[in-house]
Length: 353
Image (cartoon, rainbow, N blue to C red; front, side):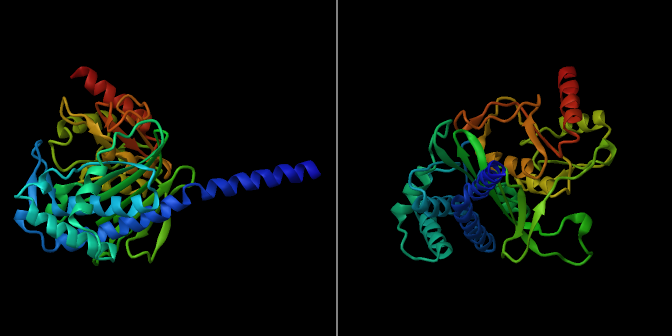
């Protein structure tokens, strides 16, 4: 009996340790994403055309992108100084004469969101450049897409602040703020307007939860139980340049999906799938494009911990240990039950083409 009690106590201690794993990181990641979400909402309401610029690949970047990245890095680096940071933006534009006016706006927005007026222009620039870390398979690295879906942000539609944590190349934590996403899924929503602003979060082995951005309501997320493709809803990007709509349409037809796609910007699609509002998400970017790890790290763990699957187009797990890029031609996410059929359909359609 004493041996059984000892074994039981040891099991309890292991479970307690697992529950506390990454507890500190989650606490401060949630705080940072909440503050970043407020920053984006404040800027979105008064954004001027001069506060948006185009990058080399013609994708837009706003003062909100810079502000979220600087704010998040400043807050988390204070608590976790030894962690690396892999993020999308750098300070190059803001160091030019053209970018100087926007730098002041970014500094003010960051100080307002942080609740303290002490960060300088140099603090902002250094924080942005700290996000140019290499990532990789060793140590711990925060992974951030400051505004995933900038075009959705500019249209005042869906966008996400997506923050993940890598530990030895594995995604172990994800937090995603979706300021414009309705709190209640479409199939459970009343006809009248619904509260918007969602926060999704997951820790490896501890499940996925959704919380309203004001912190008033939290519940566990689970993927849908749909197993018949005819009843499945699938998501894809709004922008055809981000993913081939023709290809996903052919794959859906091959599977027997009969519903029209739900087109949505950003990793909000991962959140929608995690809470059971959709069952499939497919992304097949243009040839020659390499996926960035910040576009999928937070979303992937949020779906997986809700019971779903996220793989490359061949069904292999995504490898976040290779640096700033993912070595994949396409990404498939699902509720798990439909995953073998999706991957089979992908292979069938892409082999023919």
